[in-house]
Amino acid sequence: MQVRTHLLTLLMTLVFSQLTFADSSHDNSQTNVKRIGQHFSAVQLGPRPFFLVNDMDEGALKDRLSRCEKGPFRPSTFSIGHRGAALQFPEHTRESYVAAAKMGAGIIECDVTFTKDRELVCRHSQCDLHTTTNILATPLASKCSVPPEFDQNGVLTNAKAIQCCTSDITLAEFKTLEGKMDAANTAATSIEEYMDATPSFRTDLYSAHGTLMTHAEYIALVDDLGADFTPELKTPSVTMPFEGDYTQADFAQQMINEYRSASIHPRRVWAQSFDFDDILYWNQNEPWFARQAVYLDGSEDASTSLEQMQQWKADGMKVLAPPMWMLLDVNENGDIVPSQYAKNAKAAGLKLITWTLERSGLLKDNGGYYYQSVNGSLGKADVIDNDGDTFTVLDVLAKQVGVIGVFSDWPATTTFYANCMNL
Image (cartoon, rainbow, N blue to C red):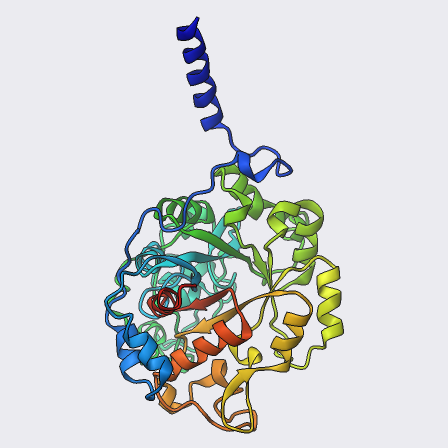
């Protein structure tokens, strides 16, 4: 009798271990949730975080970070790999994703779009193949929405107009391409010149063979790496419904379905969109996945009112993600402080994620778009003057604004900070 009972218990254990969540309304406790960083229990930061600390102005923050230099360092969901590790690796490639995981990114991003045969793939834009892949150097260039044109002497004549979309080609064709650093010289007179335009603050040293990924392949890889997922449903560049019958709702549902098919728990997925209607769709049709769906605020309107944010919350939005500059301001003493936008979001009860760290050139040269509220561009004092200010900004975002995660093109920086501050 005891043997039979033991065998029955063993059989039930095996059966339950194979079960996946078939119905998202079940109790969370019934589904195993993989521990963050299960694959990379210790991370490899490289020299950059320590270079940034050394470049900081003297003060308590520099002292605190300096004491962390020996680690150990572990993965953190505060550290989000923006398109992988796009500062030095071709974005949305296997190589970029693996690099992000090795640097401790606890969440890794795939921007999701679709091919001509409606298969989901990872690309920042539906129509960026001409800047992020080698398509123009292949016969598939002829299939582009706006293919390259040449005069009778072989000179490229339409560099500014070229456009190549994932929806121009099939998945099989997409998989023949290789990723490159996102760049284009729109004044070029040859394909070689057009493709050779990587910004000076990046590098081509790791872009020889960028492996493109389907969304399903990304899920399998990131799951194996032990990280979580943040897929962004990209706003289609083609008219929807695509070819008359593939609707935005079909697209939004297909993305979620691929997590279901891979038995990924909703708790590990941070679905994103710049389109609030996508957030509403998930709220109505995939409530478990919608619990941490992220609304990306691309309005560039830092004056959004508390009343508007309260309405967003009432409509079901829980996580808001504006660019970094919208969350920051400079006070009369020249200190970086939370903006009114950030205060409104907190008052409305919204969680905050922000983008994008390490996506700028040298901060002594202004830092550009992501720092515009603290670099003098919007009329406030310019308080950004060295690369070490990266950590000053990050510290305000974490401790005063209260963001729960930061997208970074070089996740080692955010991983280092998160470990030092026990986030």
